[in-house]
Amino acid sequence: MTTIAAELDTSGLNCPLPILKTKKALAGLSSGQVLKVIATDPESVRDFETFTRQLGHTLLEVREDSGQFHFLLRKA
Image (cartoon, rainbow, N blue to C red):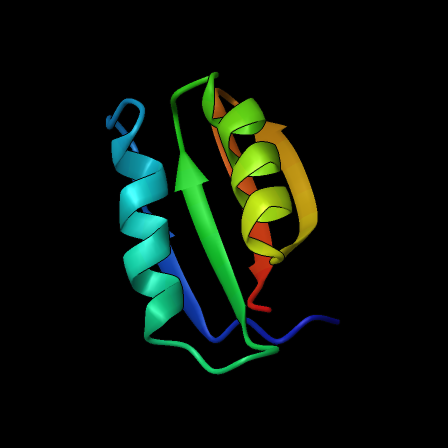
């Protein structure tokens, strides 16, 4: 089981706000810690894939549940 260090709910926000808030939240974590992000913007799936690839973070999980997208990111 993955230990989640912090959780961020960006429900109702559209691009680029979920990514900007995630970047800020990750800045407060140590390398290797995991951040859970909840978003409702369908574009966020592609945005988080690109974000993690470009910045070297690891996207551990992406799942959709009743219109909410759940992401687990491990800080590089």
